[in-house]
Image 1 (cartoon, chains in turn green, brown):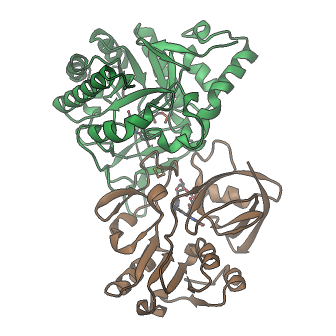
Image 2 (cartoon, each protein chain N blue to C red):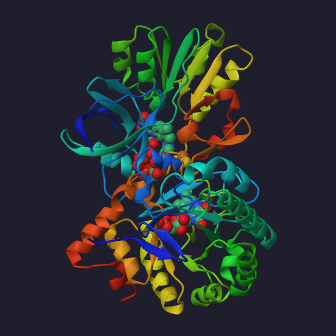
Image 3 (cartoon, rainbow over the protein chains, first blue to last red):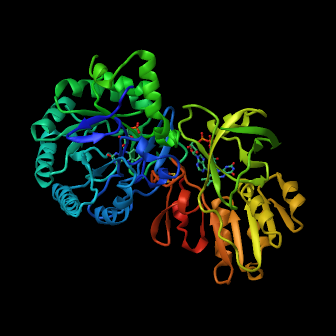
Length: 310
Length: 233
Ligand SMILES: Cc1cc2nc3c(=O)[nH]c(=O)nc-3n(C[C@H](O)[C@H](O)[C@H](O)COP(=O)(O)OP(=O)(O)OC[C@H]3O[C@@H](n4cnc5c(N)ncnc54)[C@H](O)[C@@H]3O)c2cc1C
Ligand SMILES: Cc1cc2nc3c(=O)[nH]c(=O)nc-3n(C[C@H](O)[C@H](O)[C@H](O)COP(=O)(O)O)c2cc1C
Ligand code: FES
């Protein structure tokens, strides 16, 4: 019997297949479709201290084998999340990861503290809390957004250092594919005490409406995701996994069990499914079983056996 | 997976797709349709056109890649349907008008079926299509071809108006309804990723707050709609 159970930063996951931030809400939209315990974890929509209404204009655009989005971190704010979403999220029988966004170091730190305090209170009163924090330093869709930190290692260092101090929750850092030196960035995260890194966030991209002679998006650029970016994400996961000894979570265009195996072979400990949830609303219902079937066919006993073999 | 019973052209580029199965949906609700694997990436939101005890049907225009793939479906082929999505139109009160313009007539057949007392107005820029399907089930159908459908509707005669069509048509209707006691609900369109409220792609400003077309709509009270929001999909 193959077991997909895995551990990362001291947190146990039923399997290494997680729902990626921004494509899964807080889980509730999918809860009617299949039992969410079939996923290893749900990563929340990116949260900020204050609620955000998101970007104006077109927010989504289809490209060959991908989509571009410019949501702009629309979210109800951390407090509303803690009160209205987290209680239900912790009943799904899957790990809960909060994706934290922000536009300045103090804002990120305030968010991390809020979460930390609330989780300590929950735990003290015997209730389930957040299992892990994913620090989003890579959102391309907000002004002076996380991406400003995600490109430059020294900028990011200040942020990671402060957030690390502000929280006792397990912390992974979500890296931007546009980082000037991705492996240096990942090594910095390891050095500053992050428990892992996840990558990649969307790739900055553009589409033009030739009739209106303007960008399709009000904010000019948007983030590309989906099958189109998988080969790039895979290469980056491979590079980063070789550069650090903390766990690497692979994200980008994954849409099948064999994609998951590719990311594990490239060095990933876990993977996140984003755009594919929209292509197949029931993706999470079957991916873990499909992965086990594929491993059986290929004579793979465990994911450890193939992790980072390339 | 659902099975195609028929997929017939009703007019150039306009198809009526009927799928086997017992479905329940409100007027104005929609399904996410898909009859391909990974290309194109997104499923397509299409309104419920009609429902019978053993089938559900959709009326759509083959415009881009996805809808052209739908148009190739043959009887016996399978496709994926996820839904019904959204809340659809609210239950109307009092005297009701049902207004559809062009492709926006698609969701109004189910409304016409569910509201036999209502008056139905169908507007088309060019040649009308799908009209006989309305006339078969409803005795009170006005068809307008060319011109403004709003010109043919007196809001004072109605308590509720349900409308779907091009934005300018709905906006004209909204202006005309202003100051009358008729409540106008319009069904709006935005590009959709998930259709279930998970991705925040389909945002519209309703009464000053950001809402989702897929789960909060697609029908909203016209006076709460920010029309500028609807200029870009
Ligand atoms: C709630 C709702 C109900 C709808 N009901 C119907 C219906 O009953 N009959 C019908 O013919 N059409 C309907 N539409 C419009 C229909 O979804 C689009 O025509 C269709 O998605 C276009 O796909 P395509 O492959 O032809 O075009 P492409 O150009 O290949 O589409 C590219 C992308 O843009 C999206 N898109 C393009 N046009 C629209 C649009 N008008 N609205 C939303 N997304 C769009 C597509 O879904 C796709 O993601 C509805 C739209 C919504 C939001
Ligand atoms: C609609 C949408 C919204 C997203 N929102 C967020 C977000 O709030 N925070 C974040 O870190 N990543 C966000 N992402 C990025 C995804 O989590 C993921 O990193 C990216 O889409 C690549 O994976 P995929 O190709 O599997 O989608 C979003 C992606 C999409 C498509
Ligand atoms: S389409 Fe995803 S939230 Fe509406």
